[in-house]
Image (cartoon, rainbow, N blue to C red):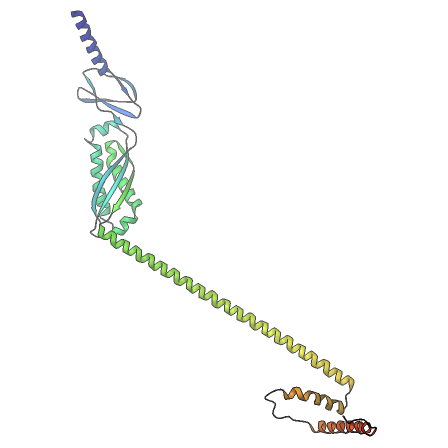
Length: 300
């Protein structure tokens, strides 16, 4: 019975010694080993052997890139307005020894350094510039943080501002201003549209008037040319036929009803030679009618 107890005790002691001697470090982790309270070495991923009760392995450090989101921080802008800013830090431990011994809590150090840097950067900007200069703010934050955390064995890869929340009154004023700007742009666009419409309408009317005038001009020219051609043809026919005065008088008598149709035709001018020709024509007609009447025919 006693032997079994001794064996059990020995087994427990062996297991305790082995647990303190053999350590396995996972991938992307690093462990700092202290020997009798002083830094000894940094363990890389894999199997490691320690001297029991002499070497002590501190908590493993994660070497992967980490993301830390800090709560909103009140920051005063250059124009004395308080805004709440949410920030996100992407960092990575590059030196386990420095991250262990150069600072007690590097997460708290990064947070406080971010807050103070934000206040310095935002304090030199007006609210409008703060809302529109996120890339500039991120760049300045990253530069300051990376420089300050370098001695801690930490590299800051990215800094992002999740939100910049101005006071409620300022938000309401900004919304009113944006609404007024949108209404102004809409009014300007509508006025520009009406202006362009009126310009196009006027241009269309002008082109239509020009085309109508051109058509009327061409029609008048063609009508005048037709009349000139007709007059020329009639004049040529008259000259070739060599009409006498009686024929002209007869044609004139045929045209009298057409001349009398106009309301403005009140006075007629008859040439003297035409009167003589009409007289001779009337005499000739009477001489023709009288012999017919003497032959027993009814006068016309």
